[in-house]
Length: 68
Image (cartoon, rainbow, N blue to C red; front, side, top):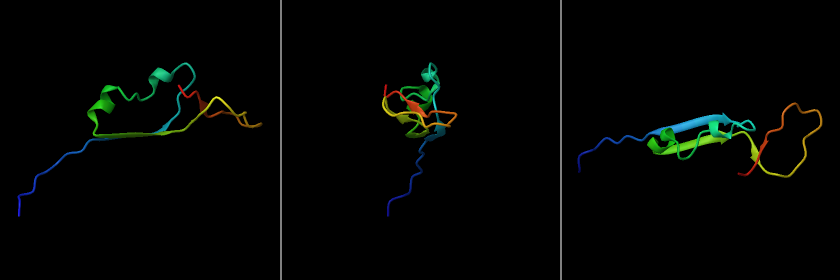
């Protein structure tokens, strides 16, 4: 049997990411230093990315972002 070695894996997780119009630069960026240091990184994007569709009447917020 070979001896066991210990391994370290760095995980970065962020939830409920919802950028505001004009503030897209404040979102976790794939080229940002925190993401680059992580072995695995993921976020839960709260927006659909689309230019189409219409707001639902009666909703206070529209969760949609431009594909760019």
